[in-house]
Length: 104
Image (cartoon, rainbow, N blue to C red; front, top):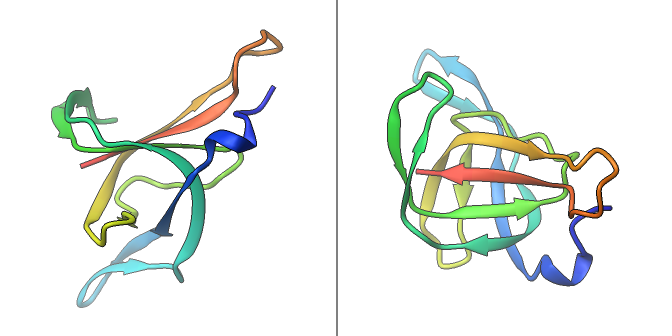
């Protein structure tokens, strides 16, 4: 079961990180992502194992591609960076499958 469509009330703009170029980070073209946005500050672990502060967490459909270091523009215009994108799959259990995107 996927995250219900009626919960995806927010939109953020996602620019997927493609790597480093000679003048800094290189991002793909911006894409709108429908999500449920939870603006709560909490401590999370980065994929490298470091404790970092996450300021917001969008929850989206699980098939979305959201690499680390991607740039996200929130509805109020603030820009943030993806710490980690975690796929939450219940493997057939009656839980909403979704993608949890932790933002700096």
